[in-house]
Image (cartoon, rainbow, N blue to C red; front, top):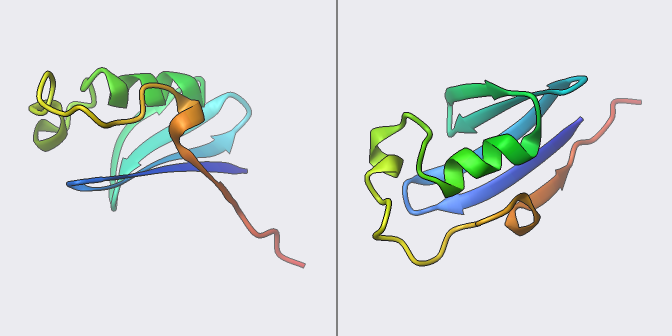
Length: 81
């Protein structure tokens, strides 16, 4: 399963693959939403449309944030032996 991370000023966002065409957006320990693709989750973060007020209020204020999923860090999840 794929995991993408973005370390923001308010905490670490994660996009977690949980199944075929199923992704979840997390901020620390709070699940913010379910998505059909990682790109759609990243787009909500970039558009400040996460329904997480502390992040969404930064719209038009932050200059540096990941505009696309390519700008997130990809984490390799270890597979149990």
